[in-house]
Every structure is written in structure tokens, then in C-alpha cells.
Length: 500
Image 1 (cartoon, rainbow, N blue to C red):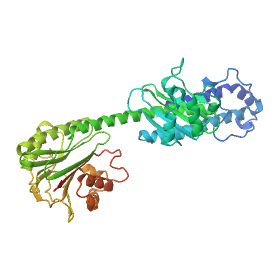
Image 2 (image 1 turned 120 degrees about the vertical axis):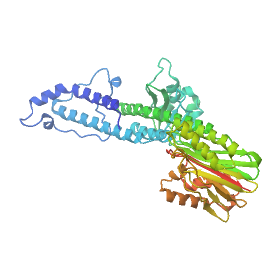
Image 3 (image 1 turned 90 degrees about the vertical axis):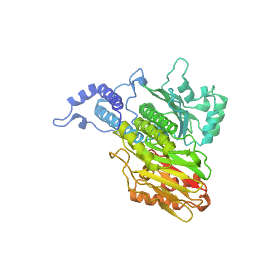
Image 4 (image 1 turned 180 degrees about the horizontal axis):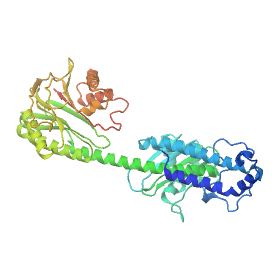
């Protein structure tokens, strides 16, 4: 939706235009036929498609000496055309800002800004340089109609001679320039030689640049549009482009804050999970973890236990955000302690964890699965609390482990469920995962389970001895086209253990 201050600024321009013509309209009304509005009595002049050049420019661009008034016979039509031009401009801005607000990633917003700005100023190519003053993110350069090599050539130009460099670093005597136009770049006598060389190589002869700033975040970056021939946008186009750039800067600031928050959440979540997987003889491990934008409570763990044993765990804490991340950290730390003391009995480990959760966090629930593995015998004893069953993948079978139904931790006054014992053949891999992996498919759970089974069964035989390749294949097959890294409220955990 179009920003209300933006509407007010455009509306003020139209009201100023209408007020300047009130005296002329009064004269028309005196001579109008009875019973017919005066503005309908005046003859119409042809309208110009697109941006109306007769609409008065913003206050800072008005000429010091006003033009003489139009002939009285056409004054009503002139006013009507001016108001029609204002409505056309407002509609254009509304459409462009609506398209911009529908972008949810920083990269897509920058590309939309370049496309819309190029249409407003009549250019074909451009680039935007993002350098947030408050260090919300790293410097970013995105081009429109410019390849990566072209952007590299532009970056070799001394920063002080580029439009975006002067907008970002300030100009002598004008620390906050509103725009920089070079209508005939190659014709400028003082142009930097390297800038002249790059412009000739890339084939642009003029440029128009606008800053991207907000009142709260300050400097964000600058956008530059390039013309193939000497040119510059008309005053009305500059005005519209400036309004759009101010709105775009506000949108970019919100996306930058969101990206920064997501990065912090991912960092905290990563610190609460194992920094590296242990090396235990007889088993190879691999893990994949994706955190949602708000931070979820999905987790995994792998810890060596006495006598060459290995404990594997996955789980999910209810809720999202910082509280869920903190609860996840506490739950994982507690499970590690119980696993060291009584890991050979997974039911006892989960029972102790359930009691702790019920006493310390009665308003929270969690699912968990713990497996006690003896790699030398390829023997596994596991128990689950409301968690999805593991999946065994091998040359001769791909099947889910049959586990008993059980409630999540914290849901009943006392939790207990029988454990399950199984053995794996040499070279088989056990996949542990959280429900977020299934939920990100967007399918009902029964269909999601079938899709996960099919993805695991389709792992090529040539890579089944590599758990890293197995996890990557399952993720790509189950969540294609980058769905595993896309924004989602669901975390993803996939832990693979291949037994030699």
C-alpha cells in the first residue's frame, strides 16, 4: 500500500497547481452557460501519454519567474489536464510501490528498485550500491543490464569520481546531495580518465543518481541509472523518481533489519548446536540444520559415550523466537547429562528429561528421540516421545523403524514408552529428522512421509557410502528449487549415521 506521507506530498503539489489557477477558473465560471459546469464548457486540449510535462515541478525546482497565465478560454481544460496528470502520476507511484512492497528479500527488492527507477527516468541500465551506515549488513552491489564483469569495471573507477561515491561520501559544501546528473558524461572536461575509459568500454554516455536514505537509519546506499546517449530526465520524472526512491529506502531499511535479525538468530542457533560432529570408530555422521526467520526450537546432538558407544538425539521445542532457542539449549544440555549417566537406557533418559521439563517449564512441550548406538555390533536401542520414526537406507531396504506411539514430553503427568532395538547391515544409514523437514514440503503428513521415503530410496548407489552426499540428495529431492533454504516458520534437522 502506498505510504500516506507520500500521498500527502503528491497531493500538496496538485493543490498548489490548482490554487495557482483559481483566478482563471473564476473568470470561466462567470461566462459559462446556465446549468452546465464551467469546467465542461471549456474546450479540451490533447493529453500527453505518460508523465504530464505541464504539471508544475516540486517547490525546489520551480523557476524564479512564473510563466504567463494561459488564455482564459483554455484555462479550465488546462486545469483539468493538470489534475489528470496528477492522478496518472499517483497511479504510477501506487503501482510501483505495490510491486516493491511485495518483495520479501533484499536481493529482489534491489532488482525491483532498479527496474522501477529505470522506467521512471527513462534509462535502460543501472546499479545500486548498498552500504548501510549503521553496518546492518555488508556492502552489496546489484546491477540492471550489467554483468558481473561490468560491475567489476565500474568498481575500478576512483570512488570520488563516481556518482554513487559522491552520494555516499558527501560533496564539498553539500554533505547530503539530493541527486547527481551527468547529462553528457563523455563531454565533461574534468571527468576522471579511468571513468571515461570505463564509460566508453561499457557504452554509456550519461547517468542520473539518487541517494537512498531514511530519517531513522541514515545512509543506506545510492542508485545510479545509465543512458546509452547523452540525456537527463525531465523535472517531472526526477520528482517522481525521488518520491519512489524515498519510499524504496524505507522498505530496504526494514529488509536490512530483518536480514540482520535473521543472521543473529542463525548465529545463536548455531552456537547452541554441536560445533562439530564426533568421530567414533565404526560410524560416519553428517548433519544439516536450517533455522526459520524467527528462530525455532529444532535441534540435534551426537555425543561419544563410554565403551565406544554413541548417543544420537533429535528434538523440537514448542514455540519460536528467543525463548524457544533458550529452551532448546537447556533441553539439549540436560539430555547430554542424562545420556552420559544412563545412555544405555533411552527410556530412562527421556523420562528424566520429561520430569525436568515438567518441573522447570510446565507451559512448554517438546518432542525428542534418543538412540543408543553400539557401532561395533551395529546395534541400536532407541526411544521416542512424540517424534517421527527414523528411516533406514541401504542397498536392500529403505524403511521406517517401527516405534510405539507416545506423547510428547510435557503433555502427560508421567511419560514412559517402550524402547525399540534394531540392527543395521554393513553400509546402511539411519536418518533422524524433525517434523519441520516434512512440514516444509507443504503436503499432508502422510504424503510427506511417502515423499521422504522416495527421496531416500532414490539415493544413487555410488554415493550411499557418504552420509554427506546422502543428506544433500535427500534435501534436494524432498525440497527442490532452494525450498530448504527459503524463508519458513519451520526449522529443518536431518542427521545421518552410516554404520560400517
